[in-house]
Amino acid sequence: MKKILTILTFLCIFVLLTANLYAQKTIRIGVPSYGDHTEASFKKMAADYEKANPNVKVKIENASWASWRQKIATDFIAGASPDVIYFTMAWLPGYVAEDLIQPLDAYLTPALRSQFPSPLIGRVNFNGGIWALPSVTSARVMYVNLDLFKKAGAKIPETWDELKEAARKITQKTDAYGFGLQGKEVEMEKYFFYVLWNFGGDLLNKDIGATKSALNSPAAIKAAMFYESMIKEGLTQPNVTAYNREDLQELFKQGKLAMVITHKLLADEIRTQNHDVNYAMVDLPGVRKGSKGKTLGVIDVVSLTKNSKVKKEAFDFLVHTLKPEYQADWIAKAGLLPVTIEAGKEAVFQDEAFQALIRAVPNAKFSPLTEIYSKLADILIRELQNLYSGKKNAESAMNSASRAINRELKRANRK
Image (tube, rainbow, N blue to C red):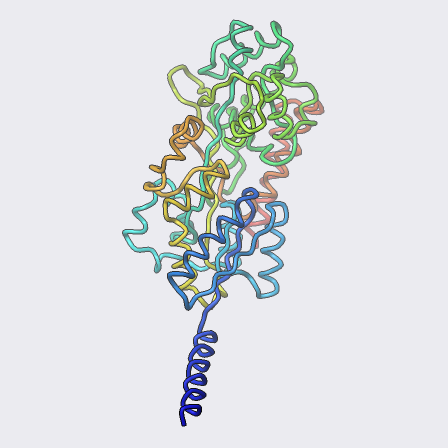
């Protein structure tokens, strides 16, 4: 009899365990790599969440940024997308237009919304709704080689005219190049935005729902002429179109470049690779003295996919990842900035390099939010390369870019 009871008890336990196993829900989290640490950081978050929620299994799917957009597209086509996806803000309009992601307004409590600085939560408000939450943010700053400035008798520029004069002195009195100008690959068009925005121009006539290009405006042409004159006068590195962002950073680390605009990872590389560079991270110049220049702001976002069957659990995990200690891990290691007010108080974000970025954020401007941004950027890149290589002058390049962009906008509006 005792043996029978033992067997029955075992069977009951087995049935309960089996039932619990089948009741367990799995949520898939798709996140691109922000560095070697990303997957491990997210797996730690997942393990902590699973411990507190034993009925949920979290699966982390990680891949490089280079292949990320294609991976997401393939998953959507196959009907097998993750429940949560991290991506760059520029892709949001396309995902909304194709009805691929879930609006989040119903999930957002006032308490959760208040965790985000208003400029960030305002930025993800698209077409009258919240379709994603900020996941990381950052801004670009200008690095200056203090030793080269001292040797040339130049001062840290507050205006673009002063930048040009500093580049001239450094070029004449040292063996270094004055100003690094990016001429190809990732963010090349955004390197032009620095002068475009500060000279009062813009890519489009509206930030959202644009109908026309603004590149043929006097302000945009004046901005293009500024870079054109820098190149012609030998104040940048030679052969501008041969240099991407990483190439410029290498020149700066080697002491061969006095000024470059980029992100925090350059500071990290100088430190970890033991480069002997005496530098400062400063705000971009303005048009007038005493006015801070506009810089590039960057926001990546996270959203729920429309076809997710576990939206409640997926959003709950998304909120879980916003804990300050998690942001102080994976976001800080990526050299980026946290997205909640409380996370910004973490000790890791108090160092000098992070603080330089934080000071720049209020002056940040973002790329236009349009589902055809990549096409517009390609047009601008092509014409900027014509300008930088001397094939076209500033007015011709901007007018050509403007006409091509207007054709793309008309084509998009007819769909």
